Amino acid sequence: GCRMLRERGGCVLVQDEDSSMVYGMPKAVAEEGLADRVLSLKNMGPSIMRHVERSRRSRQGTP
Image 1 (cartoon, rainbow, N blue to C red):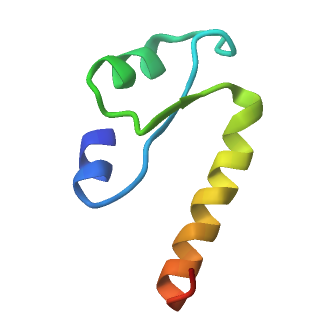
Image 2 (tube, rainbow, N blue to C red):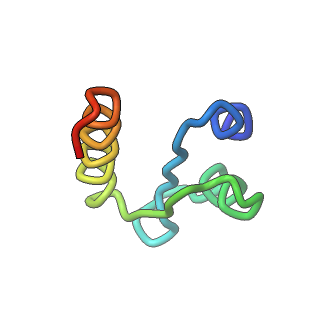
C-alpha cells in the first residue's frame, strides 16, 4: 500500500518507535525506505495539516 501511494505522488507518514505501542508496521515501512517522514504521535496531526495546506495552496496556484 505505501509503495503504491508513493508511486502515485502520495506522502507517507510513519509513527516513530518511541510513541508507538507496537512498532511492527511503522518499522517495516521505515526500513523499506517508504516513509517520507517518521514522526511522534503528537507531531503527526500538525504535519498532516501542513501537508494538506501546502497541497491546497499548490492547487490554487498560491505560494
